[in-house]
Length: 117
Image 1 (cartoon, one colour):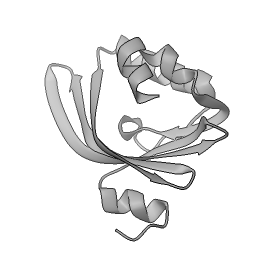
Image 2 (cartoon, rainbow, N blue to C red):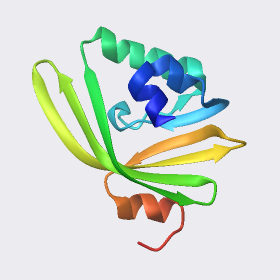
Image 3 (tube, one colour):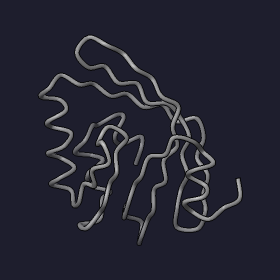
């Protein structure tokens, strides 16, 4: 899924999403995106505003139906570059992404999937 996104873009990523997926992106200000159409619209708006995001995954850990990813997110907007070390929890059902939430730390992400840090 990550490789599809990195090599073929958003539309390739959207093919992995459940119809009722819920995403809580780091850049969403707490907003919950529901369904592939909201995800598509959110990232289209970011691109329209000139925002560019680039993620790097350092590690992937499987925890039942969830995956914890740790890495970095680089964001370029209005001529400024920021980079954050983050963790994400991706929850799957029948091989499709059911939810994705970003966290400030790996420990926070592990707590979300009830795994001791």
